[in-house]
Image (tube, rainbow, N blue to C red; front, side, top):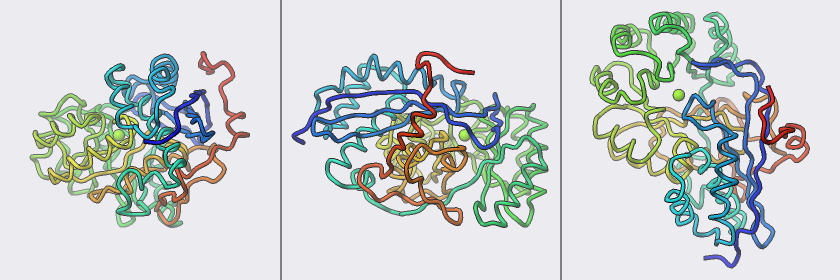
Amino acid sequence: MSNVTIKKIHTELLDIPIKRPHQFSTEKVSSKSFVFIRIELSNGIVGIGEGTTPGIWWNGESVETMKLVIDKYVIPLLLNEDPSYIEKLLKTVDRQIRVNPFAKATVEMALFDALGKLYNVPVHQLLGSLYQDKIPVRWALASGTVDGDVQEAKKYVSSNEYVNFKTKSGKEIPEEDAKRNLQIAEGMKGVSTIGIDPNGSWDRITTIKWMDQFFEAGIDFLEQPLSPRDIEGAAMLVDMKKVPVMADESLATVQDAFLLAKEKAANIFSLKIHKSGGMKNTIKIAGIAEAAGISCFGGTSLESSIGTAACLHALASVPNLDYGSELFGPTWLADDPVKEPLYFKDGFIHVPNKPGLGVELDEEKVAKYRRKEQGEVIV
Ligand SMILES: [Mg+2]
């Protein structure tokens, strides 16, 4: 226990531009929205956190719903409580508020940042220490054309900025998507290869039909090819023993992890702190993967350096992170709202080592990107 309490909690929305439009399966985006949270303790320490999602299509939450859930329902549960009881506080929040894992992860992030600052240790030392202090990063190709993706990949490999890639799929019909990805893999032959992420938009027949060609083209993995609810279909793909199958949208809770392991419906787990409600849950899921012989991958919700720092603190203690990560959010954004962005070098991102999350808000940038009408979306 500590001798301080949670005194004040404040949230606000930000919209930060991105470097180039990003094609997801359902929409093309040109800026990224965030909810920022500050948790102030009675001794003046302030913990910061950030919530963001690929879009409301991903799991049903948006930055607006996160802000509302935190302001109206989470804050009353935390005020005047001892921040060193994070596990207990989060269990209370879980009992009072169903689902909303992105909102809960945002709160957990700020609580751990505050606690790390209180005890003067980086968050990874509160979560399970270090297995690694830097993590490989894979870049997501999403230019919208085969040529654009191939050229982008080759440019990154030659500058040694990124050497592994994945593609976003799901905009076209599955058959066209499969062909396009094979063309990209073909164009990159001898240079690198890709993992494919259709965000659950493919069907069993198409995926099975193209599996041999994906395997021969050296595709690294198929990330959530089928609907998140089609566990039986995912198990069929795993049973083909060709391209490894990654669970992303189908994996959020520890119970999801247990089910996927039990049904042999994944070769790889995509670990994401927001979809799982925080860093601690993410580490628990990695433990289930380890027990089941499943590899892990550090997924992203395209966070800035704040959320990405939290991802790094969680993944730093995971030994079975065999597929590295896609923690490129801070370099994907056109601006990063921190004083000192996270350190990327030669395809690796480094785990911060300062107390708390190890990143500090740049108040000028926060003011610049703060949404003018906090209740409305600016389009
Ligand atoms: Mg994914």
